[in-house]
Length: 417
Ligand SMILES: [Zn+2]
Image (cartoon, rainbow, N blue to C red; front, side, top):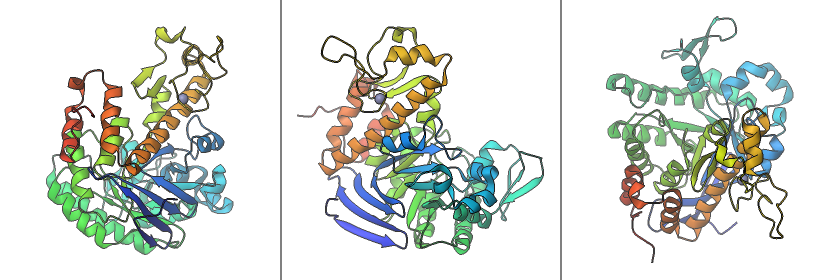
């Protein structure tokens, strides 16, 4: 590891700052968790039922992933807390010796269950099995996550969609999230082996976000998340919230923007000072036949790929693409071709599987390139190249990205000299 510029440790985590971009707010760091070091910025794939849809733990490891997400809600239902306790946690359950992050379970309940109802006590809902009333409290969420044994646990928060017009309810949710954090901290049984992150709420209101930042930072959790975003707000509003929060957060703690996964959102959020991201999008979109590439998203179901013997993406190092295409000797290499994936997209799960591997690898590799560019202090040039690859014409660049990056000193429409 390169010599850190600065470091900070808490009981179960060390944060080493390796480099700062001299133009934007981007940073490169190493986050050392109980199951090993993780290089930031990072994209974390989501393994919903303790398995990433379409990938085995070995294949996930092969993509370079050293930190992935599990859903507390799904694990709590199946196999359930008793089985998890008996087997010794989710790492053992899924044969994953690297780091895990779990959500609180609250968001899943609110988004999946129509009948969820939030009170000061917790999230009330009806069991999807037999309809009996159940209650997820901050204490119950932490007990479940303690049993799961995740390296990073998330507090239970009161989440509203950012576009909610009800300012009073938004303030209540933000303030309740702070109170619930205190209950989570009090309930946490394993602070020496598991890290509890707080989640900043407050919708799109900058003052509310600032107030929440101050309250959450005062609680001194080992890491900090910015929550409630990617709920349909305008991208410009999303960027304003991220930049408002990162300006107020301590430099030597990891900053996690929840639910973000489109490549453009990732590279812009890094420039705004965020380090960690997660999203189901790369694997979900794979199941619709989509390959994520530096030139954009390609739908491999399209008939034009039936006779395309190139790899999903030229130069991609994932296990599917490696070796595909011309072998330089007049033949075709051993990798998987677009034509093969196209042939399977309509009827076989193998296509979703191959596209998942490729897409997760793309996301992780994108973040590796982001990190290398920050360390070389070439992140503004990286951003200009990234958007030039994605759009043929500078006039087509999304205005929100152009504006957000201009705000941190990068003009996307200027050529590098
Ligand atoms: Zn690939």
